[in-house]
Length: 289
Image 1: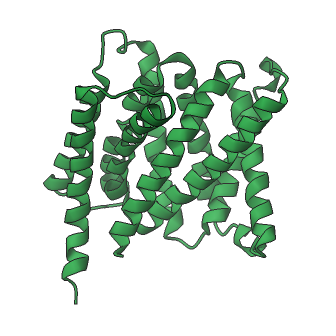
Image 2 (image 1 turned 180 degrees about the vertical axis):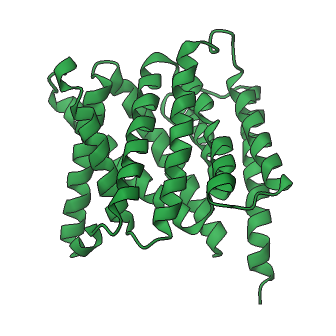
């Protein structure tokens, strides 16, 4: 498979995993403070990652080559995660996810400005069409346009900046495991600073959910890092739109929520825009001898 095609598949898989994680995170934030969620989940991700590396004899992969961009990615990830998880506690999950889909647009702009990625009118058009598909699915209401809506919008901006830094790290020699552990450690430490503001005791059910969401976050972050290692920010960013499609499928399979006509129409638009980008980006690879 071509490098762009691999990058796109990795991002689509990452979005599927993150969608399940977002559903668990929304449930946890109903009774656990956001800072506590970030700290406990982040600590579990680090423990699981290090244990996985030790079990496979790959502790050398934890060696950090460039601390400054790794710590910068961690700070951006902590800010983005804190804002997005906060938005899940204040907004319906569909609203929060939909607003955060400004991220691919931010990412395409920043990729062109900072990394010098070449973005043609076709890719810009596909990004815009994908966003239209999301709007069709969500059907924004006047209640959605309020101050709380700025929170996931901020999360989208910081997430796009994180992706730009990730792209630079991924092409600079740092391993996926090292990037994951450093960034998640920063997120956990950021969450730990909220301890004086009051945490709640956790029971076994909550700890079980934390373990599950930690594993999902670790997998999703690894897939995202690998996607950005193989593909430009402007290429893989639009495929973040697929997470709302996964959310629709999850709702139908788990809770029996049957999608309405606008959901099907919006999903078709999102999928069509993604397939167009996929076709455009993999054509050169297929033509190559």
